[in-house]
Length: 179
Image (cartoon, rainbow, N blue to C red; front, top):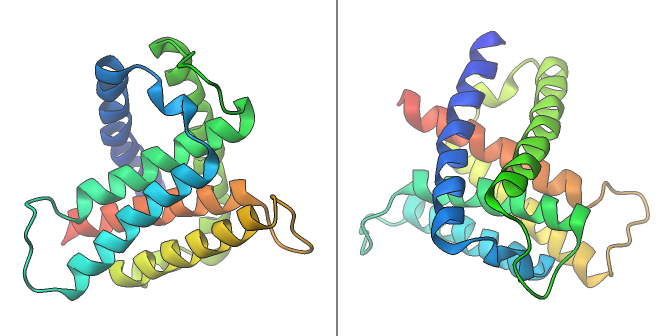
């Protein structure tokens, strides 16, 4: 499992670097986004990945990797929004945003390591297309929970679904790097 941990860190380092560079370009403008808006952004990216996996012709020269990075970063932003709440104006300087990013990654990686232990790295035998479908399923669940004003009767909350989407996306990127 140490390979998984190192591979996970490598994928996250790529995502974190892009997050930091976009923060330098745009600041924390994303802080005004409500959760359904972030969910919709993730949904668009997951739908595009599925489309790329199903269609032979590509009209835009960006592959699955950049879309999985987007899912990871938007999901981390959503987790931050869940903790801090939505604001009317950008309010996080780069250093604070990066601290929050790292906190959410640490919590999500711990969840992955715990589940990975219990499931015996079953994800290694999965296809990237199956991981994509699981992400889309999680998104539909999140949309339903959002429509229910965040209330669930017996199910895990929105945060756990965002964490799973991050982890499935990391797994997909590991698969893509190995193929």
